[in-house]
Length: 612
Image (cartoon, rainbow, N blue to C red; front, side, top):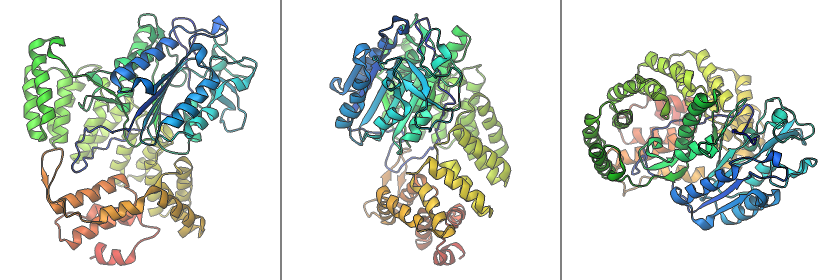
């Protein structure tokens, strides 16, 4: 809930946090920094500063909305006619509904980007349908709310229903409000029966529970038990201010001149957190939840002009080098080009981070670690990067096989970033490789507690328990995973296999056949199985060339990366390598096939290709 003073009090309870699994996978023929293309971009922008009762007015919610609108048009490639703005008296409940169920639904399609921004009041009311853990519905407050009429607000269930009816699979929702209800009764909005205490539920979780499909991300201004401030200095909420300030080269961690949803969150989170600590002596930490497998490209950076930069000589060189790097495909040559800039200012944090990433992409992990450790040596500067520098160092040591060092840096990353699930996933993988099952399970469960709506830890735990012979535990895990991810193909494959081969139920067949048809998995298998005669040479991101066989193997590896728990693609890979007598170590592929096909193994394939 926002107040009319120098700050906006906004409280989202027990919020779901980051689901960012760092996957450095380069698809053959595709640059690792290429943007995700959308047909069109649509935005619904809502800001409510004024209400009938002046006591409920806010300072900058309307300006938040108008500033976001301007940024989307200027830097987000949104056409003016595709941005709809509802502020103050225009932001009624019915107009907001029409904006989503009418305008957005009728205009946006599956491959369009949809951006929804809300800045205004929120509250809590008694749960009407019994689906809330704490007995309260979180609500958005439209302009025309009636304090005596609970139906005049927009509950989490209603909002989720509106979103669910959209066709787009690329939706980003941004909230700058609270749901604290009676927590601010003296200065804000409350309804009869609303509580001020923080419960065990939250608006973002409810949206993801109610929306039974992927394609939705949510970015909110603060986490549980926190205040989210407005600033007279910025004339914005500090969350909105730093969200807009994140449209800068400092936030562009992959150097593609695009600020995607992940980069937007990390930059906004860190600046908001640091500013609130320094100026308000309290923490305000934005949160991000996503059910999209890729990062949404939101803003685009303008070309850097040398005469606008502080140090003209060095910055002019930086401008030239950035241009040269964009033209060069060979990673080794990219490094040589960039070292010209690094050598001029070796203490520059951004230069060290950039060259570390180039070394990492080129497989020179020790050199990358050297530059990342330099960043760590600069107090507090390392926390501005995403992913965290300590986590990146841990991943590099993991790739080098230095497991103990990797564990150390992952644990250091947890101290400052306990809500990043990929850290726990990395630790679980190392512990599994050391046969430390207990610690692996502990980290997988921690990952789930941080973000319940992800598939990876559920599936890893499921197959782990299954191969250990813990059938009942495995069944409980996959039942929970299926309830969280009912439309994920690999989750349904595991769940239906349990129903068919363990429970002996026909439910498994019907579920599997239904999603198999909808997911297009058969077409994917057909594509991967077919050797394309035109694929003799393919250029990839590091400038190397692939032969026909290498290109086909890369195509199968890409499918495995897309469906890492589906045994059929491991089977295709193993068969192709063996049949063509290619010198590839198949031990890990064979192990994974046996692991993931445990309920329905192809005995003939195992005899001819695994045990030979």
